[in-house]
Length: 217
Ligand SMILES: NC(=O)c1ccc[n+]([C@@H]2O[C@H](COP(=O)([O-])OP(=O)(O)OC[C@H]3O[C@@H](n4cnc5c(N)ncnc54)[C@H](OP(=O)(O)O)[C@@H]3O)[C@@H](O)[C@H]2O)c1
Image (cartoon, rainbow, N blue to C red):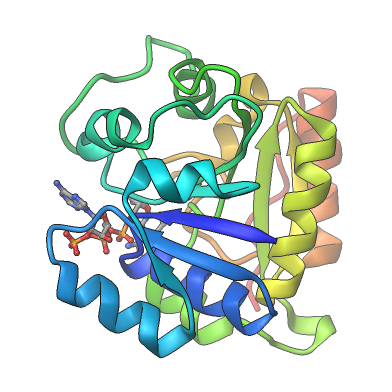
């Protein structure tokens, strides 16, 4: 697939590298340092383009910038209508914030008009994501995802798997608070989960019950 990475830093850079290795065409974009962008693109066999051009040519758009840089990234990216978006961001720092009780995913989906929005790759540190990709099946790390477009989530689940993780769908954007910052008891954010236990979390979230305790691996 043609994949645009808006913000190929620690999280976006790892995603770009892993998806390029899986055979996807990646286009890197949105950096204050053109040489750095080119260096990574050369290293992984990807391209470089303006956000607008990268998005225009992509089926999937990864948005992986600091929260405060989202408005600028979206302005430069242009229309996202019809594009599958993977949002890795967390609501730290400056910039417009979700309303009380609104998830960051629902808030961001609302400012990406027409996008086939998903959120993933946001719960684990970049170092941990780099270190744990491609583990054998029984110890694979879960990358949670949420979104309101089932087909988009199906595509993104496939990409997560190809990137070396176990995708687990938590449901829609309104109900995904457990995968959002901050790290706290009763949430999966900031914690390692593997498949069997993660599926119990999905059931609990669906039923509106507290999730199981964080597993110790
Ligand atoms: N780091 C983690 O462990 C982690 C874990 C999960 C989720 N996240 C979330 O994922 C998102 C990306 O995090 P990250 O740690 O990958 O960030 P990062 O390493 O700082 O990367 C940010 C990317 O955005 C680009 N960028 C363009 N304009 C920018 C600007 N004005 N200010 C800052 N960056 C700009 C940066 O390019 P240049 O630097 O080349 O300009 C870089 O490619 C954040 O929302 C974060 O909350 C992070």
